[in-house]
Image (cartoon, rainbow, N blue to C red; front, side):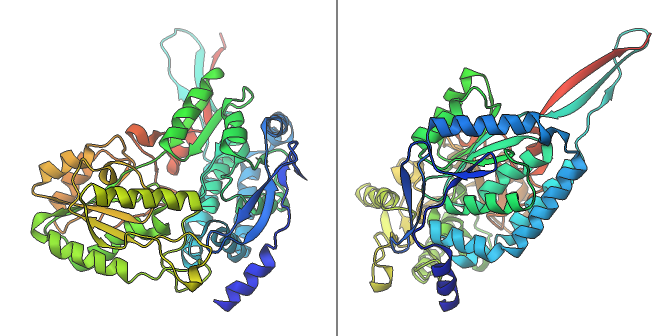
Length: 495
């Protein structure tokens, strides 16, 4: 742990970190700043500008100038080479990036380090996609020498808004496809975790990304984020965050009918069938929620367990939860880090009280985690509620904290109906040793991703996104590229 402590003290010491517009590092026109504090102990890491609508205007102008200027001259192969160079630089600075994420939003360092394959894979995957963009030659019904074809063109200026729970991966998931397709980006990180995103901008600038292709405006969602969503100079908005905010962004985008992609909240079911391998299922089902202290959109927070094994399974999950080590993210032995802020920790505590008042049975956890080493931080014990019914708020509402709501079931038809009885549809998990059951449930569950005998698997080549109130559009895979491209039809009469 000491090695990481030494590195942490050298990384941030309360200084001002400017935002990035048009290739220049600058303050906000507002003159105001936002404090970035370590959720593990409340220490001031740095301050960042509190960007406003004028800063968004400047960023949009810079992005438009780059899109119509030097960046438009880059060939697909030059964009590919740039992304590959960025990937190499990310690899060289990976420890610093991960330490920044851990300090700024609390994720345990072992978990941030483990994202290496995914993030570097994204950069290299989109580098490959950059040279795979093509149109079609299409036969038509007209007589004579009339030819029709299509070309794929970058959609233009993209506004991207990301949450605080995974700044490295969240940023690259927005920036890399934009670079691959030839778009330009204004990225508004969460006010709760902006520091790593600014580090990413520096790396990309050093790699030779032209001025204005990437712009970072730090600030509040209600100010900078809202201005970006409604800006008439933005051609597309991509957003990851809460469903409520996603709805507001969709409404704001109607001004110029900009395209919108939304990856929103979830209340994902995890179904443990009676034939499941319990030894293997317990830790995976538990960490489907407890990973990143439950602060993850795909958290498998509704745990449906076949009645025949329900009591034993819950006892084991509760035992597993009670043995997880809570602590600072830079401690390599930490399993559960802090909640991002005092406000979010209070929100989770409210749901703990709601669960108890509604009659759920508390099996473990259920309160703040305290102790000398946790002083000044926002820690919640990993919590398991049994005796939950479908009508309880803890079974219906997204908590975004380390809270499992466990529910028994008797038949597959029943559990499918209950699992689907939610406005959300982001992800689902199934544990079974029967191949037929695996296929049946995977096809019947209304979710954008279904994992069988595993959870949290995300790969650059595989599309990810939700259905229903969990949003629309996909990130990852070739489908992701489509979100950043327009199709133009070309007709030529050679007769």
